[in-house]
Image (tube, rainbow, N blue to C red; front, side, top):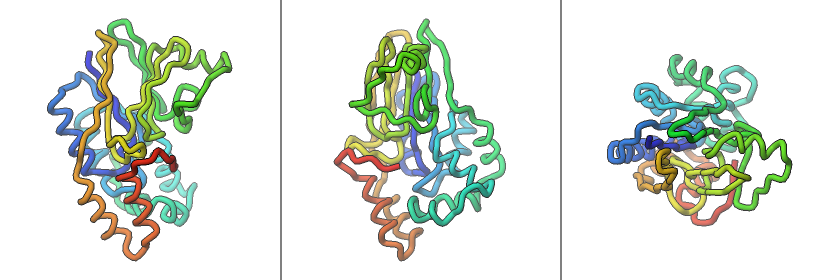
Length: 243
């Protein structure tokens, strides 16, 4: 079985459309999204609709949770606008009810077995489903935490936007990086995993970044700091993390 896992699209419709063309070419048997429809850019509602239409398997990301908290009055819009630009406010005002309900019923993780391989899919990790960040220097020495990973042969994780393959005990963790906002200088990307052969490939792909930058200029108005932040990360070459 050939599985595609991708994560952290963050409302980047240009990257999402390019990703769909990639899927037409490689034709996986199953596509799984690791969360974060929302935050930063402006096309999340359409992206949610398309993933629903195509019946992608999805889990809830931390930015999707932030959106729901905003809709429920548990967060103020102003701090989100200051940090992430106007995308949250625009999405909260315009999200289709069907898409809001879709987000509300999403699980925090997904697990499956194929060809005798046990797989777990998370935005964060098995020890913190939404917020854990696994980096190259991350070590797990606590036996109880390690057991959470070793429940699976392979764990697929997002959240950091950094491509990574790392082993914890008997478990291999694979992070494909971000499909919508690369932060490691290696491009927007996804992973293909063959459960029969137990092999994987992290695949980078190009998209129309210039058009997204034009959207940022148009929609963020006179807020130069916001525009600079939202555009800088799209072309980043150094591996510096932001939330």
